[in-house]
Amino acid sequence: MSINKLQFERLNIIHDLLQKNGKYSVDELVEELKHRLSTIKDTSGYEIGISRRTLISDIKYLRSKGAPIPEKSKKYSYTESFSFLEVLGTNDTLLLDELKGIVGKLQAFNKINDLMNVNFDEIALRISDSSSKIVMFDNPIENLENADLLPKFLNFIQKEQVISIRYQNFQNQKFEDTFHPYLLKEYNGRWYIFGLSETEYEKTGSKQIFQYPIDRIRDSNPILKPKLAYFKSDWWNAENHFKDMIGVTKKDGQKPEKIVLRVYGNSVDYMMSKVLHHSQRAILEEDEYTDFEFFVIDNYEFRSKILALGSNAEVLEPSELRKSFAEITTKMRKRYLK
Image 1 (cartoon, one colour):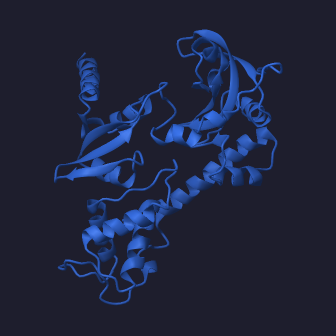
Image 2 (cartoon, helix red, strand yellow):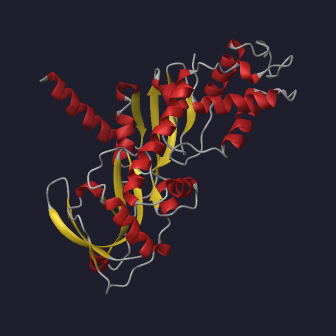
Image 3 (cartoon, rainbow, N blue to C red):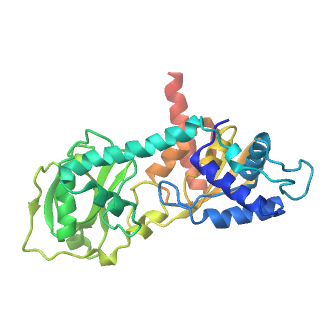
C-alpha cells in the first residue's frame, strides 16, 4: 500500500518516538502527534489533525512493514532496533506523484510570473514566506482568463493606488466600483482581488472587504483614481479573514459556527487523511460512521465539500443547515426521477 505525504509525516514522528525506547498508550501517542503536527501545515496553511483511528491504522501499517511493535500490549514500543527507511520503498508512486504535483504548481506559477515580468525565484520565496500579505495561491492553472490583469493588480497593491473597475456578475449585471486593492488570492483555479469598495463605504459608512473574480472584470486597463486617498489595509487582517473558512466567500459580519457532520464508509478514511478545515475533529467513532465537528463559516465552498461526499455525509447540526441539505437532496432526487 502506498502512502501519502501526510501519512509519511505521521509515520516518521511515530518512529522517532518509538525508536528512543519510548512506551506510549494510544492516547499518549495521539497527544504527542497532535503537538508535533501542530508545527506542520497543509496546503491551505491549516494545522494537520490526528485521530485514534488514524493512529491505529498507522501502527498497523508499520507492523506490516516489519516494525517490531508487539500485537498484544497496552503500550506501543519497539522490541528491537528498526530502520524507518524500510517502511518507504523507492517505488512509492503516490509520493512521487505528489512531488510531481508540487513541481507542476511551481511551473504553472512560473508561467503567471512571466506575465508579471519579475524574478521567479524572488516571487517563490515571497509566496513561501508566511509574511507575504498581498498574494496567495492554491492551484494555479494555465490559460487564465484576464491573466494580464494579475501583474497590473499586483502593481496597484504595491503602489497603494485607488482604481475604478467595471464588473459583470454571473447574472450578467454590469456595474462600476471604486476600489482599494489589498490582496490577490487564487482558489480552485480562479483568481480573486480583495479590497475595500469605496462605493459601498460611501453608502454604509463602514469598511467592508469585497472580492471580485478576475475573470469577471471587464476592464483590460482599470482606470487609476490618483486624486483619491488610498485606504491602507491596516484595518483588515487577511490571515484572520480566511482562518475560519474554506474558499473565499463570506458575508459581511458572518461568524464561524459549530457544524457536526456524520460521515459513513470509506469517506471516513478520506476525511481523516485530508482534513477539510483546521477546526475539524472526530468527536464520535463507530464501526459504521464517524461524527466530525467543525467551527467554520457556513459558505458555498464548505457546502460543496459536504456535497462532494454524496450519500456518505449527513449534516447533524445545526438544524437550519440540516434542513437546507434535506431540501437540496429532495430536489436532486426529483430531478433523477424524471
